[in-house]
Image 1 (spheres, helix red, strand yellow):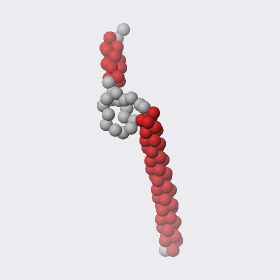
Image 2: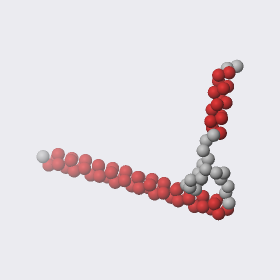
Image 3: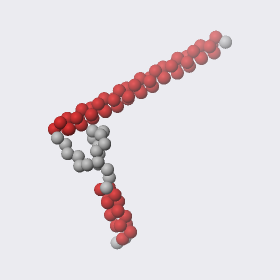
Image 4: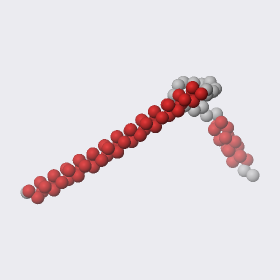
Length: 86
């Protein structure tokens, strides 16, 4: 067997274990995370707000894109009209 490969896989597995805990409530917290019912409710509200923000950003981006396309088409049509008038 390849001992180097085994050592690398073990080291990689060890690094994965040492990752920082997820901070679901967006507060600085380095201790053990225990979730009471109130905290779970707060997390659910926070996630819902994040999803709502993401949805509004996505909607704004899509409307901007549509407006930009319409503006581009309008400019092209005006350029064609000017070319025909000459």
